[in-house]
Image 1 (tube, rainbow, N blue to C red):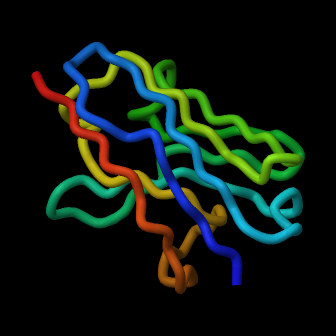
Image 2: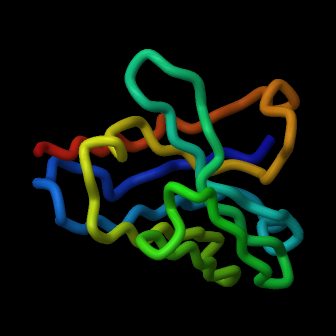
Length: 118
């Protein structure tokens, strides 16, 4: 089973930036369509950015123009560059396979906490 470890979160003021990273185990990473998910306090996970194995990218409306997703297949890593952060971006950030139905995902990494103060 692939293991995922997210990092790069922290506490920032509104308008600040963070770069998240997620490292996957195994040698199949390059075959997966990947996504970043966010779980705000007291709410469920929401998908905010995707990058497929061919490099195609999509963003949730809340991320467009501020976030940039990228991947480095030789390093088994997917990144999320986040700029102009605001308090609504606060939450636990996870990476995982890009799926429509999150119930299909049975294993999550520990996530990385992002806290944005106003």
